[in-house]
Structures are given as structure tokens and as C-alpha cells.
Image (tube, rainbow over all chains, first blue to last red):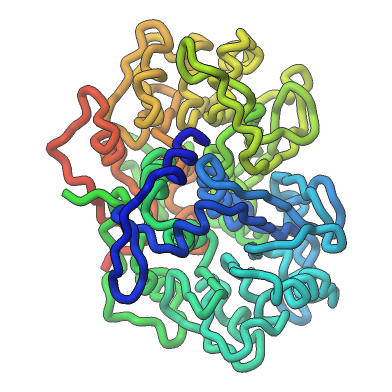
Amino acid sequence: MKTFCRSLHGLALGTLLIAGQLVTVQGQTEAQKANANRTLSVGYILFPGFEPLDVFGPLEMIFSMSYYMNMTLATIAETVGPVSARPPLHYMAPNEPPMDLSYMINPQVVATHTFETAPKLDILLVPGGTGNVALEQKNDTKVEDFVRERYPELEYLLSVCTGAITLARSGVLEGRRATSNKGAWAQTATHGKNVTWVPSARWVVDGNVWTSSGVAAGMDMAYAFLRELYGDSPLNTLMSNVEYAPHTDASWDPFSVVHNVPGANKTRSLVDCVGPAGFTE
Amino acid sequence: MKTFCRSLHGLALGTLLIAGQLVTVQGQTEAQKANANRTLSVGYILFPGFEPLDVFGPLEMIFSMSYYMNMTLATIAETVGPVSARPPLHYMAPNEPPMDLSYMINPQVVATHTFETAPKLDILLVPGGTGNVALEQKNDTKVEDFVRERYPELEYLLSVCTGAITLARSGVLEGRRATSNKGAWAQTATHGKNVTWVPSARWVVDGNVWTSSGVAAGMDMAYAFLRELYGDSPLNTLMSNVEYAPHTDASWDPFSVVHNVPGANKTRSLVDCVGPAGFTE
């Protein structure tokens, strides 16, 4: 709530110099303190056939964070208005009939801006989903063109799941490490020039580009990302209200083993012990 | 995909009698086999100020399941069209000024039906969120009236987070066990007549009513619910594609301890080891 937010901003916090960074007594760096005092412009790409949780996993946490911090949200698509999560017609393999999934249920989300009218953005999030495949097959490059054009103005670019395909095709992954959904690995990892696709990773950070593994992995990436942006407070309070116990180890990736991704780390346990963030027993 | 679905339906599976239930060789009960062969009508309540992940956590899994199984979806609100997740004006405590959270970001979802036009439903899901509080303060009973009226036709009624308040106020929790968000426990657990509010529970099942703890807990409830409906196959495949490692122990609830809920089980560990569903090392 704003009251808390104002109190947080208003506190005359002492500072410490730890590992060359100014850190407040609450463990907040100077950069995190500065983030708490400005308005961040967040953009979210939508396209027909987006994966619902790719959008709403990270968005739940960003939405909750906007209770404490100043943010704006633009949901961006080819046209404003409803965008369907139902997969459009696409092909799964050569010489096979088109996949008509119009029988699937159809959650719809509202786009507030087009690629032409989107405001200046500090943070851009790109979801994945079957719609990505359909766009590529139609040679529709609007999403990747938008990512390429806007990348220079962004402070952070994030993708969830096969959203990494869009990032690869836009060119911003060139020379970078990235990851994506492990169930769609064979298809995903063919994209992009000079991309080091990391086979076992819940998420990967390379510079200001964050890519996560499949769908639910976006929530763990979002936790790590918001922690970098703002520190532990009020993030851990928020996580306890959302009742999500995040995986905080970026190298935990049982799904790379389950899906038998080439190069997957099979020496690690498939299980991982998680509990509330910021609390220890 | 339908091909898989048809193959699944078409298999001449042998059956076994285990513990009095007919079970297929794949571990599917006769009831689960019957569910795989019919169309389920799913309804989702939306209201201004719904919590985004309360809706899209379980919905991601239901959406993914609709790839394999026949389902319809109705998103139901007071009016069709966009419904905002941004909290409406409400009061948090007596004698305090109203909470104006209009500065928060505003994800919007499309309602396809009104309370009057909603189709016959087999399954109804009720999310929580600050909007619940606002409805109660305005004496707006439309959502709980809809739940009360439709309950006799439902096979299953599910709530996430403070959606349990709506269920309590509708009367369907009378004589039942239920749970809700642990961060809003003091306020939530005052609702309903003769409700046994369970202080430590990720989710609670009482008859055909499923209630989950806060926000992200809805995903674990959804996994358990879909497992009851359809069995492990194709659910576990779906979970590995969504890359979510569900908590499968309904009594795991570290957030009841974190939020110091009266009666919470403090003897249990806050952490829980989770890995991919259906896989063992």
C-alpha cells in the first residue's frame, strides 16, 4: 500500500559499503533504493495463442509489487482489445495436416496498446505459446520486429518459455546465453545466430536479458528479477501473501532431465526443497 | 492433441478391481475413463479486483488439459467484456480512509457471459482478491447469489484464496471444512455459519467443494483436482510441459506458520521437497 511505500521511501536508512556496493541497513542497494523511488514502465507482449501462465505467472508478482512501487502496465498486441490464448492453426511437422486446436477452451486477455502505440518501456516481457509457432509459419515478424526496435530503450528484456524464440529471431540473443521450454527444446534451440542455449537452467541471465524455462519457470525468474530490482523487502512479504515458495536455484531443472534435453545435467536430484522466501527454520 | 485424445479413448484397456473400484491397467478408474469421454462445462467467476493468479494458475492447467479432453469455458461476470484486476475502492478497517489503489497496474480479462446468460455448468471456480472485500462492503451479493443458485447443478465447486469468503456467504460451506489465504485469515474466518476453517492446509476437499489457501495454492489444488477427474495420464505429461512441480501434500502449509494463524501446525517443516509429478528417482 502507498502508506507502506511512502514509509519505505521516507525512512532515513543508514548505509553500509559491502563488496563495493552501497547497501542500506535493510540490505537494499543504492540501485534498489533508486528503483523504489521511480516509476517503471512495464510492457507485456500478447499474441493469439499465448500461453496463459507465461503471462500471468510473472504478472501476478509484478501486479502485487505495484501495490508498493510505482509502475505502469501496457499490454501490447497487433490490435487493442481481446487477445485469445487459444492456439491458432499451425503445423507441427512437415507433410502433416495443420493442427486445428479451435476445440480448446479460450481465455482472453485485453491488449491496451498496439505495436505502434506502445509507450516508452523500461521492462518488456515476452511470453511463449503455440502462437509463436503460428507466427513463424506465417512469416509474421511483427512481435520480433517490435522487440528488435525497442530493445535499445529497455533496461530489461525478459522472456518466458518459447518466448525465447522471439528473442532469438529478433537478434538480441546473438552472442548470449539463454534458455527455453525443455519440452520444446529440439525446435526452440534451432533459433538465433550464435546463441548459447543452456540445457539445464530454470532461468538464465545474460546482461539485461532474462530468459526462463517453460511456463511455470517464469514465476521463479520473476522472483529473482524483482529481487534484483528491489531487494528482499517488500518482495518476501508479497510472496508470503501470494503463498508461492519460489525455486531460487537457477540451475535446478528437473524438466531438462525429464525431457531428455541433450547436455542436461543428469547428476542432479530431480527434487528440490522449497519453502517461503526469506524465512529460515 | 485430439489424436492422442482419440487414441486414449480408443484403447481397449484391460481393467482390474482394486479396492472395490474398477481401475484400468493405466491406473485410470472407471469414473476417470468416463470423464475422458465427455465434455465438461467449466465456469470461471470474474469480478473487478480479482487476483490474477487465482484465475490463471488453475486455468493454465485446465487450458492445457483441454488439449486432451473436451471442455468448454465460460468466464462469468456482471457484464460481458473486460474485467479489471485492479482493486476497486474499499475500506481496510473502520474509521480509516478508503483504500484507493487506482495507481496499481491493471491486467484485464474478458468475461464471455453474465450471471444471467451463463450456460449450465459442471465445474465452477471462484477466485479471491481485494474485489471480494469491496463487493461485501457495497452489499453486492451477485457473485454469492450466483454460487448459491448454481450449486445444485454443479459436480464440483472450487475456490482459490479469499474466494472461500464468497462460498461461505453463499451458504454452501455450512457444515463443511474449508480453507483460505493465511495472510487474510482473521478477516476470512469470520464468514459463514458452521464452517470449520482449517488453519493449516494447502487445500481442503469436503464432498464436492474444494477450497485452496492463498493465490499460488490454487495451482496445487488444481493438480490434485485434475488428478481426481482424469487420473495421472495425460496430467503428468501436461505438468512436465508446463514445468510445474506441484506440492502434492494437502497438509503442507508453511504460510499458516509465517502468518501465525491460530491453530496452525507449527511442528511441521516450512520446507517441502518437490519434483516433477509422476517421476521418481
